[in-house]
Image 1 (tube, rainbow, N blue to C red):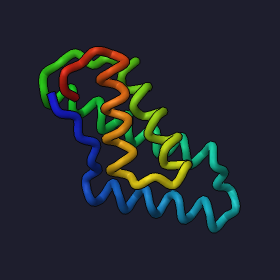
Image 2: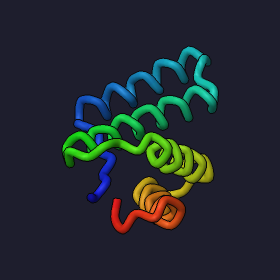
Image 3: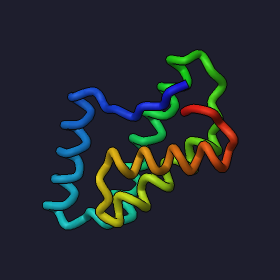
Image 4: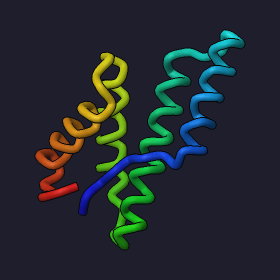
Length: 98
């Protein structure tokens, strides 16, 4: 199974708009942004499992998305962060592919 976390174009725009509105209003805190990023990550993760007709491992999704948020907060490239998190998950959970 290959895991890809991609947002449909309209969801990307909604995410950006929500972040901008919160930032402009001075209400966006890093914990809020982290929650938004993690939420979209988990949604993509769940859809991949559904599309592949597989039973979702919530612990695996939590691990990958928490790792992803941490790496993004360190200003790591999005694609690189996701790939590294997937590799770590492969080792930790014993999957051959994600």
